[in-house]
Length: 198
Figure 1 (cartoon, one colour):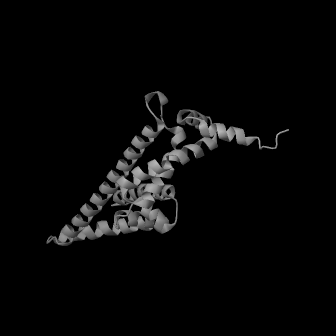
Figure 2 (cartoon, helix red, strand yellow):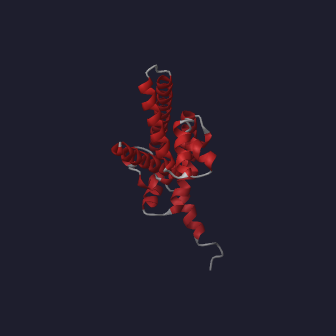
Figure 3 (cartoon, rainbow, N blue to C red):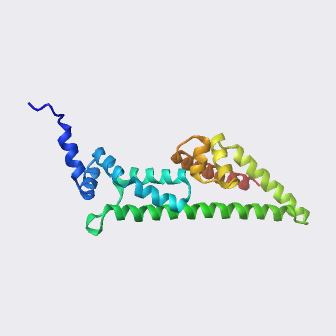
């Protein structure tokens, strides 16, 4: 009887397997395949993410997200290597994040400009309407949970990314995303209800 652990041979064979073979094993639910693919390609994914995002936390989050969702990806080994696929996927996802970040900051700047324009308005009626709208928004915000308020204020008033918010509030990025989404839905509903009552 051999004194060598039975898993040693299978682990050695997995180390010798191609990315395409490991990806198929991953699709079949073998978690060790994910670990091996991560060891092989995480440096590449992180490097691309960091170069584009210029933020270590966001690059780490994106790297983790790429590998956690790899099982559901549409990689086809007949079209090219997994390494190339991961590089393209990472670049695409990083650019999406940059577009979202830019859009959020643009919206924030526009909101600040609009608020300043309203404050400097000479029309007293416009000032009354502005105050009323502001009170409606404050009322709607008060209906949200403390965490939802924090996430929305940090996003729209401070211009922070979801990764930065997650780091400051010490919560997963997924939780930040869901709280932002729920908060916006509640705000929209509350404001719609307020408008209907007017």
